[in-house]
Image 1: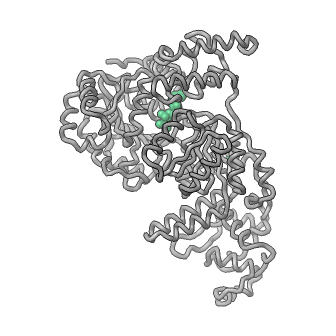
Image 2: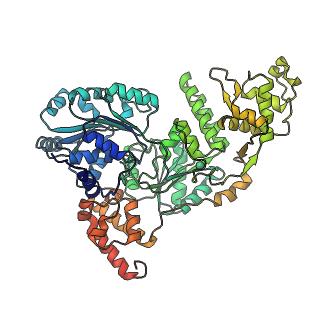
Image 3: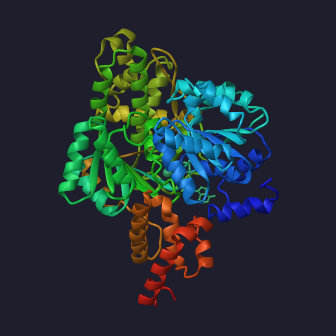
Length: 610
Ligand code: ADP
Ligand code: ZN
């Protein structure tokens, strides 16, 4: 047996992957698998899921079979594993018969650590039969949420995977996903019938991402400012329509930025070419509709800009989630304009399916509330996934950094709350706002609400203001909306404290244009401190090697690896091995060229490396 002791575990982590320590949850998962226990793990993007099965795959005798839904990703996953010296291959419909036979040969001769296969293989009897003739060590289901009809990406092929536990009665089956609500999680567990699995739900928090929401004013000019601040870094700009993608990409190109468009209206060939150019660091920026991103493993995306309002919080989380997979700082900026709301609403109104229409409207109102309230963005996002954020200040969103001007509006809040109380918590938002504004509506006359003390008390302010404040009260959990077709508003304990002047409430000035220009200039883009000049040289070398080898640059060495090299100036193989992500095989394959470059650099700049 290849695996024997604890030291094997850490030796392999270091020698094969070049890592000194495990990320949260990794060790627990790896140990469970090595003890042949089933595993179900929800870990966010960048959490390091691949290591959880690749490490056991190296240690256990036989081949670890990974079922993965995206053919386009398999090649990348295999290339990435091979770069670390892991014997990996894939089997899918894109292979010609000769290559397929070669992979089968490797499998039968027990010379593969990892085999990636598409789920439809499991519907083929011949494939299942063949499995009985080879030595399998474990089965892994990547993107396990695809098995659930309740998830957002159901794939019927995945249903055949429920046969895995019967196919491999004595082997561990491990399922991984980055997105699963509790409901979807239970659904996956039921479908796969995992046997007393270790269940891991990691936090959805992405601490290395910072969130920033800005008032969208002159979007082109704002994008130019943002790109200048992120010069030379890789990023995605999301836009809603194909036309705005094309226009923005053309505008950026004309201004000298290296940017390319990506949307479903482009030919397959162009789409593929543009995506490749981005993955291979040949352009910095991809301007895209939401068609872009699925199946992108690029780890060094340093910023994501939403130039239009995303469709839902889930979309926003996933789209921003593509940044900073490598764990280094990355920035997410959302340019928010109330005008976008009506555009999206107009589009939603054209939907014929009533349930779908309601769902979309609900999703939209949650995004609007997310963007326009003064609650820590991280807290709001985590809250959406049912997770409570432990800290008061996240230190890396526009709200927590105090980038937004706050105004006290306790008195105004009291007016709204008092209107709710005086109408016995029996009415919805529109009516309450109408009362405070002193509107002359049929409903107000019918109920005699023009005789209330709060009637017309807030005449001096616009309807929009009262609506924003009311949304804020909902978001800050001062009031709550009942379920059902005609939701009514009712008070939560915090409302009572506000009415008694025991607590105050503040909101951000989101909609004030005049201040926005100043505010925009305050945006700071932090990088990892290191010798920038050396880092740039290392990046150039990395790109050269990557094109020679036909793999994306981040697979040669990640950004964290280059940053570390550019701050500790390794000049021997031993020091090079202490750099994160530098394992023995990568040292052997690429290390010498990097060492030579650093050596030369130190000779030219003796003062820096001293
Ligand atoms: P996921 O599939 O969960 O999105 P990946 O497996 O792609 O995440 O890993 C994300 C990044 O984190 C990769 O660049 C990987 O090399 C790195 N990584 C994984 N585990 C560790 C670790 N223990 N220490 C340092 N970096 C790690
Ligand atoms: Zn925050």
